[in-house]
Image 1 (cartoon, rainbow, N blue to C red):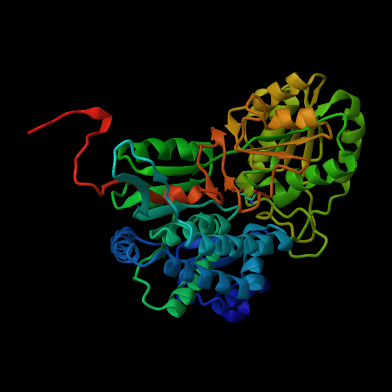
Image 2: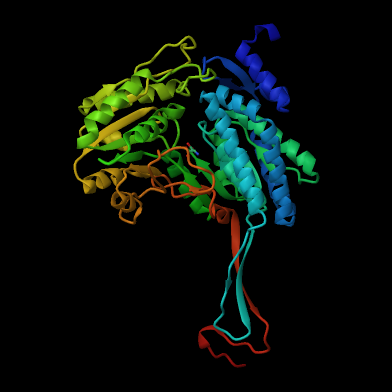
Length: 509
Ligand code: UN1
């Protein structure tokens, strides 16, 4: 049996075993997992059935009731321990991220680093869940607000950041006193199983963690729907397409549950005449081609001033021709495979549509390095010069396509920039402070993330992460995103002997 396994499958099983995942979870299940590196099957994962989902939700609710009374800094200790487990298993989990998603090794490791960082952030935060005190209009009264744990938090995550997105939500949710139920992408259940095993190790070291505090549901979108519709779940944080968000949001609203939606991006950068082009070139290359264009923050539109257009585009073409595409495990590779055949087909359809809209395209073809197969899709990132913001440019295609547009006047650039349905991340490359400040102002970029002289992708965990318009409006990770995982109580305390009423109302009995 073992001898029939491919070397990748063997490696995956070894990694999972070392990370503490029982073999029964990945050898005999009905969910077939392939690596995008070669397209071969690397695991068969057991799906969670409906009864087990209901059991997990009941256990999570009970766990929440116990966990909310544990002092927050103590809860922070659990997350600190999780961070330590992640730190000690960074190489193994990072490699598993690479094998399961196809992102290059330094990005696989970077994803786990992002998890470690958010655990550190959340552990510190556990001593800073602070509310305001507010002056009262009444004598001998005091007002304040208190932040209480919320309930069960559902996390629905996508394949491209299969574990970091869970950690942004879970680390905060746990220190805020909540239980977490996680439905990862069915394309990436292995890294989720490994992360759950590391959580359980941390929980065992902590001791006395209520059963069901953090659980994993493996399966298709039906399980996500159960989370969305369950009255036990107070908040759902969902990452994925705008179409998914449109389906989820009204159902949550219908039962007055909270939503954090992190949906599609159509991120642009404006390159101004004064830009440092060497710096801009590197930033554009990473943002547009990195992760094979499969980040929600991927740079998808470049808006270039006509005086530097020819120079910049010529330099970009060289980079697009020479970028190393191939096995993401190999040092030197910068672009790995697309996640699957559907992603490849969507990319090709978008390129056909762009060509029909009059675009000139460099790249986009399938390249066949040694690892290529019928189930492994490597493409040269596409640079698409296009005269206007045609319909195809306004849609998010989750692939490495960079549409390049020309502008003459700064107002025109800002207009093009904001004239798309999505509003996640944005950048400006300029050394002109008026342009930079205008871009960051109320009449500048309309995105949740606006950067100067860095690319659109690769945000740090310390800031709030998310975007506006069709991106869904949610904020995760740093800053005060934690407040969404708690409920706020406003308290008024009378320490006097009279009962003055607010607004001067008189009510004598
Ligand atoms: C995503 O693609 O869903 O800013 C998240 C970034 C990463 C997160 C991307 N920190 O590119």
